Length: 164
Image (cartoon, rainbow, N blue to C red; front, side, top):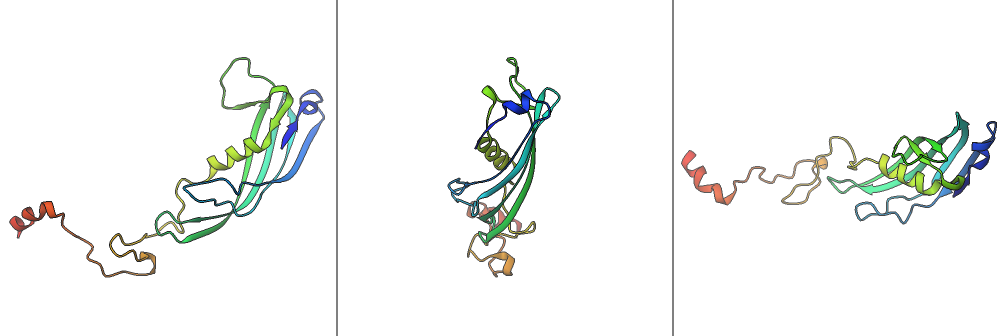
């Protein structure tokens, strides 16, 4: 969605509300397309001291395998984002402001980047997930598998005989 924010910058009393849905179902994370519902986006752009303030609330359903045990995680995420918008940065590099050239803001691009930066780097079914056994593949969250936990590296077997 392209927002024309010209009136917000030029008319101090003007505000621009928005409410729409964005499809991220084709977005790939770690070989999975986890966005199982459209992203609901609701917010407003207001004039703010010679600039503009963007506030947005987003929500979406997300489904991805656990990074340790591969069990499916189904979760609803909700985030709040705020940005300061300016018509130009005067050749400055400043991450605190979003430059809006020609008063046109690509809201889809901005919100997509915000969501991807906010998502966790590791997806776990629970914080104490034990993962899977590297020998037999059993999910260790369901109980012990009975495999020998400590195996000596065959290259170090000679040293083990010295200890015994």
